[in-house]
Length: 441
Image (cartoon, rainbow, N blue to C red; front, side):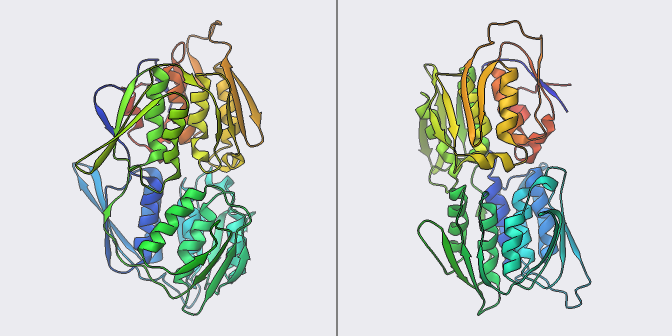
């Protein structure tokens, strides 16, 4: 599906409710599935990625029910399995389709390795290109039988988890989160040691460790997360409560407002949350925007606008690589040069986001230099030149690229057509409604 976005001022007096966090929703689904008792996950994200996880965890022995009101998902009710089901015969292969969700794939690969039944994982075309190699090597070191297509799906794992020591480089933090969530459930007396010489996206490990602490899981680690020691024999208990808003998704309506010269108020974010992408609002302040946080009756809201031009700068995105597409389009409308650095791992997401964003920004006439680990973005030299009546940009089937290009379209000289617009459903199903229902093509 393609959409046509016409430039206009985005935002207004009304408040926008931020979608629930994908990272929190998937972690809660998995912890609830591996735990005992019944967990009620309130206000979860209802997107393609989270649906993939909800459809996958029953393979671990859990039961998942949806609670809906007027067609809107209000809660997941999860009956935990207490432990990953085993199959003494080893003949019953359980199959899990991760869809487009890398988080589901990586986290469940480790969880499925706890039992002695084989699990085979598949996914969509993008997932087929995302390597789990370092994670699979670690699982193999812990006694798990592993087979794959050069580290990619189809992947089959079969436990049991025997513990031991492994060295795992983590260009994506999901490898480490997967191991940390599974290792405590290994048999009592089993000790897992993990050496981490490389770790990107550190705030996601903060999030994972916060969940383990909430479940009273004992583990030892160095301050820089370079070494972990995890004893088996722990268990997860049921937990209830709402899912926090998603800072990653919130970045797009905020960027749309400041690019187009509008004003927006977002509801549902918690500035004390562990999500690393909350630093995006600090990025906006550094670029000359006003960011106002306010709490009323326990509910936070943040208002974003600018009264002057956006300013370029240097932004280290190692902890926040998902912000690269949206920061790139902000840089395209900023005065001066914008450098996005230390984000080579943005190349191993759903797409090579560095190369894709450089290619599309150049179509808009933006000076853009592609670096190994980021982008250098200059002025829009072609803004005054003759351009096609409709500029066509490729979304590459990547939800974050599609949403970033939609933000860029609001400040363009004319209508912009964006391909693969349906990709937003991976994390932000209601995204196009924010843009006053742009024309479908």
